[in-house]
Length: 232
Image (tube, rainbow, N blue to C red; front, top):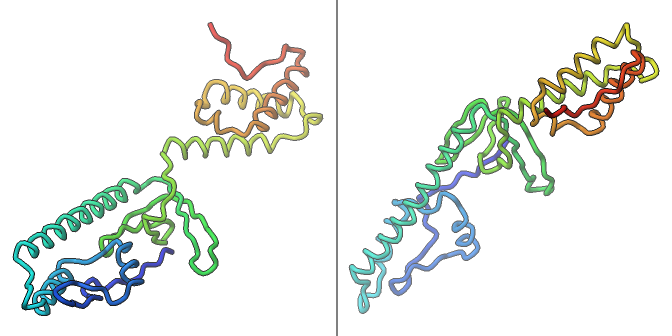
């Protein structure tokens, strides 16, 4: 399950010197710049008040500079809000779809993948979390979103290949026991399986299907059928 670190948006890691905002910890500054939540309005106002309180009385910051700072902050906040809104909208569109979640263990560096259908989406701290089989995953960890057509085709291919696996060795094939089954499989592949599923078929299974079909053809004394549709 994806883990999130709580961030106190109201904490201010800065001091004012000669009317300028200076960060106490450069490493934390770099970390905060890459944090999605960033400073909120309360944080900005605290810094602004501190800057006004401790500014150099001989060279006070002008109102124009304050307005410029606030305008810049407002633009950044709007961009951040827009990004959050797009993330939440994207998460909602994933409900009912199959997704792949890729996570990296911070301690070992190992990568793990989870694939499943998104049951519902939850939101916390402007972050979207996808519920898959009862576990919540951060939307930022999603690396694949599979369409319903694709997953349906995969299921068809899986069932079809399992049916081929159940057939005996070619030398044990008989008309009485297997003729009807192989004819049905041939008809399904030729006339009912769509191109998407055919393209997902393992080539070895396609070869095996043709071998079984031709074995029945030999037993019947018929010409060999192919897996290529005749064009008119």
